[in-house]
Length: 392
Image (cartoon, rainbow, N blue to C red):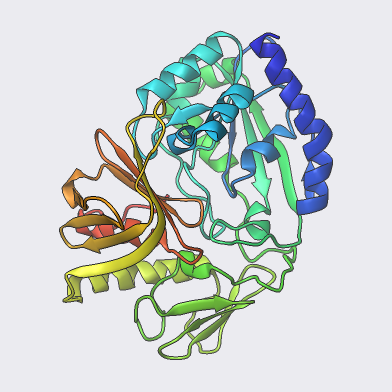
């Protein structure tokens, strides 16, 4: 079986099994779209959930090689199966990865299809994040058509911080198709603007209701400062409510993905809460006298040097963020100290995972079910003097 045939078979399985399965599980409504044959294509889509590559694949009639964070390539047998069946392109997070660009060019040269989520990571609040630089330049370099895909409702159904799906509707469809000839007649700035504008979708409040009895559960994976009393690490969720254990503030996460507090704080969406939290985090960084800013127990510690290597596993332990950097303290083994200046990239991965990238090694941590990786990324940004940086 040739590689082309193998990927075609996988796509047929996706269409045959996952189209009806995801329609039943997530309320997926997809609109079929035919890509141009015998020419390279770049499929670009906004990013809302872990399952987005599968949702996008239900729309198109050609196999797509998605660019994916390199940590999924370092997990032994699971990673080997992903490589064999899907051949995704490993990409280091938050940095320019020349190897990923080279692989993209090779696929394009063979008239293949590459899938990229230009925002770089799933949305935490239903609003899209900024498009990473260079996407338009890459499309022009590989002389590819561009398919601009939209996902709506995946955030409502399976939010990045959540643990349970909500019953609602997800729509996935091709919004615009730009041939290489059309993009070649545009300036790079015009093409970048076209891409960014075409990936914007509606943010909360939604017209569709996303129903669950546990809508608020695990919101503390991204919110960690009470918007009323300003205390850190006091928020606990249960059912549809998240509550501050210090001042008694309660917030209901509603079916339209808005927030209603039991006090008037002028906040109605998670995006507004996160914006306030950013200001509170800066004040905390400047005024908190504690040397140790955060400390949490993690279920797994691991590291890897490249996407070709399996992880070196350290087991359970602690992560501690101080003003000079990060300490990883495995229950057995030596303490690992990472100075703040040595960190090239830090990012939450999915709900309870944290990636810490150095120039020569990446550390990958998995916390417990209420672990908040967001606060570590946000506070380290303040330590490094780049507090305005988006959390991706």
